[in-house]
Structures are given as structure tokens and as C-alpha cells.
Length: 112
Image (cartoon, rainbow, N blue to C red):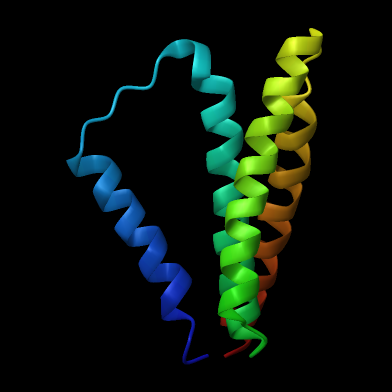
């Protein structure tokens, strides 16, 4: 529970940086960015869940964060090149995992 602040601090810091630094992403990259952000959020909620279960490992969190984000954006790009809306599969998979992790975190907090 003591390392739970790491992913939460990363999420807050990322949101603050995003709000304070106005970066405009062209519309053609919106699919890639949306999938990458969803994958990153999935990793953050997975890190929070692991922290609550006293199973958090910083190396696993960081490697999962970057590999999930890059793989999701790459799959969306490959799907565009093939003319297939492949990003929808990533949205579905990461969305389901995000809601599962959120439900487990909520249950853990309610039991306390």
C-alpha cells in the first residue's frame, strides 16, 4: 500500500502537464492518441490495483506502461495501413481491463 502513490502521482502529474502545456495533436493522429492514452490509463489502474494487493513492482509497471502504450498505437497504425479499424479491438480490450481494474479497486476500498 505504501507504493500506491507512484502510479497515482504519475497520473496527476501527467494530467497537470497536459493541462498546462497546450499541445495540439492533428486530427489524423486522434485514433493513435486515444488508444495510447487508454492503454496508459489501463497501466496506471493496473498499478494502483497491484499496489493495493501489495504486489506492485516498479519495473513491471514502467515496462507495461510503455510497451502497452506503444503497442496499442502501433496496432492502430498498422490497422490504418491495412484499411481495418484495428484500433477498435484495442479500445475494447483496454476498456474492459480498465473497468475490471476499477471495479477491483473500488471493492478493495469499500472493504476497508
